[in-house]
Length: 67
Image (spheres, rainbow, N blue to C red):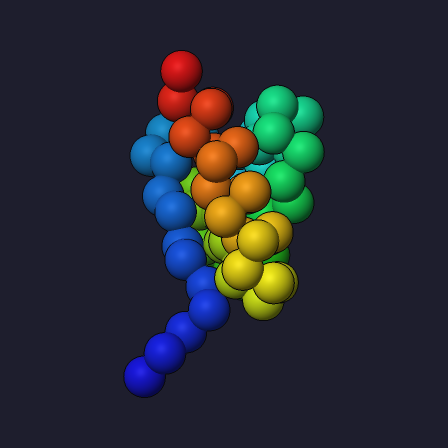
């Protein structure tokens, strides 16, 4: 089955802080994992429901966060 979502785990961090950091530093909107219940805490969800060029740009921005 194909799913256009990726769940990314950030151990030891809460979803809201991760969401805020990503938005502030890369201007990419993710979804808080905690919005899906207690088991989602520490995760953000990234969607690929956009045109390919936009998804690739988001990936480029995510790579920049690692530097």
